[in-house]
Image 1 (cartoon, chains in turn red, orange):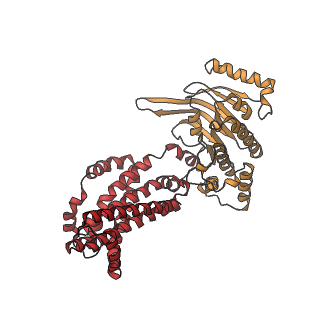
Image 2 (cartoon, rainbow over the protein chains, first blue to last red):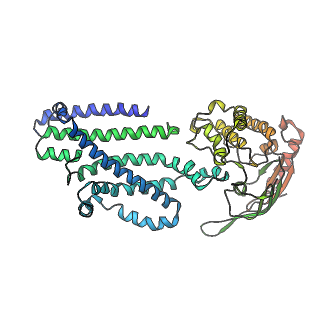
Image 3 (cartoon, each protein chain N blue to C red):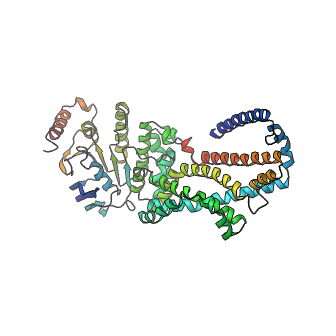
Length: 247
Length: 251
């Protein structure tokens, strides 16, 4: 139900945005700002294999970047939450590197790992993994110690405590993380796809821009937004399926 | 039988070590139901935490059925003040939690027991609800069901009725005694209500101010008496307990 409500909210937002866009386009009346109708009528130019390749290339990079970030970040966060020693070792490192703008590392990453997908995915990981580490650690620390008591008195093993308490308790937090991560990853994508590739929605927008093909450029912007929105809705559905107790 | 020998609990606060409890020596009979009453901060909850295996740093001995107490080998039912249901499990899953943790297979006999207890506690129709969709009384009944379903060696309850409103409380107490009479699980519970102690405790254990020791263990002839307040002995017994309290939790 929550997803349906969000869909409704999205539609409202979509219509309002397009109205504003239309008005602005009429007032400004320049080639740089076409009317939304022109852009939508031009969308059919994009259909076909080529467009699929662009979307898949972007999706692959986002999914791999997020997947690796979660796979590395969650265990590290847990380690830091449950082991004082590891927290003391890793905490300074995490806090020191957290505020460094990782996009500035793009040249280094590309020099070390080439122009291909590896460096694009790595950059996404560098940016997202730290927020995953910090928030999963804090989510675990914030679990009220009382909640462990009944299960401890049952003689639960560490694995059982992990499965019955820790994971379900931090799941909502992790999904929020995933949501934030998707937004961030898409922004980074646009930046990294400007270099060393001929596929991806970021590339497509940049390419249309340099060719002064504004309708195509706008089509690309709309598509990358739709991609983000679809991923958001998927996380919502995932949350409804996994966190039934919250609905 | 639960045997407590010379139990002391210390913990380290920020500046200095604190003696939280003891020395306490007590034997709890098989099939007994003990009400522990004492001033706040005397270590009643600490005692329950030690008995439930949540606190493991203590000196002295706790023997359950002749073996040193251990949550892995013994089966301990623990109901905290907030009932301790997991918010992400529905009533049925919460009730089965103890069996899953103990890796008890659910055969037809166990299934029968589960159904019986859930029906007796009137939560069978709530099986698929989550704790945040239940009232306080319903949550508590689910917690009691969970404990009785696992058929524990000992049942520990930390002020189990204090979070309920007065009317629900009386109903819950009656229901508890009814199901307890059926299974006679050895029970130790903490309370701050003299009336509750007299109504629900076969023995009443009075603790001193911190660090809590035993002041008196009273055999309670009024356990499970109806119309308790109208009974003459009730006034006598509660008068006796009140005088201990007035005397600063001393005889």
